Length: 174
Image 1 (cartoon, rainbow, N blue to C red):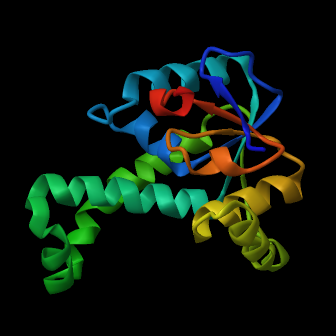
Image 2: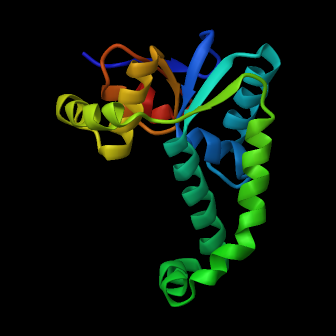
Image 3: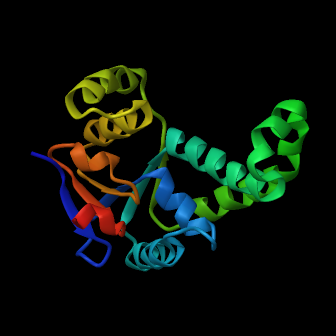
């Protein structure tokens, strides 16, 4: 068995967890799913659907957004450049702060801390659903909070039994 896969235009639940790729795709106009994600984000805000992200989602989003900025500047040498001069991060902090402020202004968006018991429980999710660490922590966090729906643009959480996965990724429907 696996997750129930739903399109972005399906009826949304009262509470939904966001994956980092949804945040990133909502923020970056050049992102593959920008249009779909930004439209869904407006729909969520308008309907005041309770949305949840964890501090790990926030960290993943910051990293992904920073990485996109650095790749634009330094192409495939971005990591080498970062290792040479870590201060290149500082010029992007205002951008990351603005994204974080914008997120904090979304009605009914809650940012939660992840208790250590949840992080430890993630090993069970890694084993049961063949998830990598972060996705296992996301799944464990969702179950801990009693949330059974997630918005994502990747396919990894599709393997988790007992949840609804909202996605615009056409590969999820093949």
